[in-house]
Length: 188
Length: 204
Image (cartoon, rainbow over all chains, first blue to last red; front, side, top):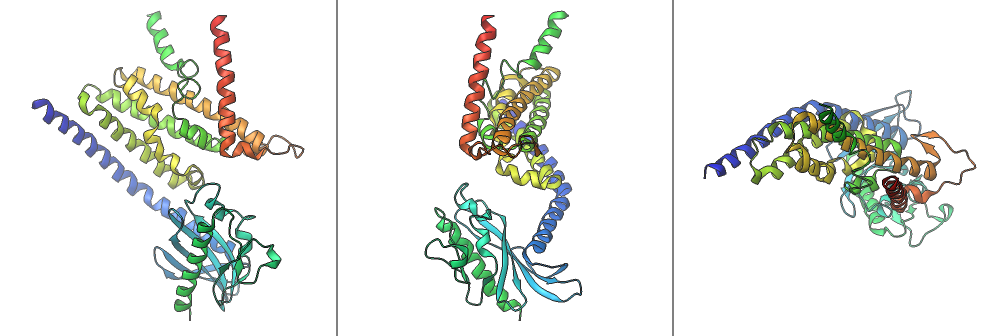
């Protein structure tokens, strides 16, 4: 009986010390981790809006952000949208840039994903996926092409899916289209 | 005195070659196969394992007399998980690129058998000094395994070592070496060669 209490006591003691240490360490590293995230978003804004010099957040929720992209004269040239949506297995975080009239999607960047390596994970790959997203027309939303096409054969609102990863490709299209709906409501 | 020094020395040295966790014990295969596609990843992974293994060994050997046998594994896991989480947060805070490249493999150090194995087999039975030596030896052995693997894979697969150009443009990059099959090919070859060397040395 005594040994049983002792056993519980020791394990509790170890766990308490450990959680105390971890709590301290989490608080200590939190600001750095947030700074890194912010830096990553800032870098992504520069990449998805061509010619952008500075940005200002318009909507700043944890899972949905819109940034105004300004040129050197401070005039608005487009918006960068940060959004998180459901992928094949886990959440996909993307950033994309659109022009100020909400007609053209400049380019897409995948910030975070946990899709199947070798298949769905190709959504981060430029030659397999992202290059088809350059300068798409978004007035009626993005669609997947019915079969793989060359870049110049694609209609202006079509993108190619990744062969072997249709679900991940569809997921990205859905994330973008959902976000576009929201953007149209917010930016008017 | 001589024999005691000898045993301290062997505590350290056995992990490097004779009981090398990667090449001989076949422990920690998951990170060995997964993160060795670039030397920088292997170095970060090794550093994290060195930190976790040594820190856990110190704590476990310090409190080994207080831990009842029934809850020893649970206590080991809590201690190991604490240090792994610290290493993971540290990388995420100060080396975000590396932390991204290593993905889930840093948190997975918790279940790395090298660490739990050394706690159970060594640190929970020996004093702090010997446990540190043993942990250092084992984690350096792990680092050697990872560095060997990643050196071959990065040079053959990408023509670079630690990002520096090693092979010129004439080298037709063997993409497969960077992909998962390359990990198995490299591991098989390295283990084969090391086994060959070991049997040869034994005979001599």
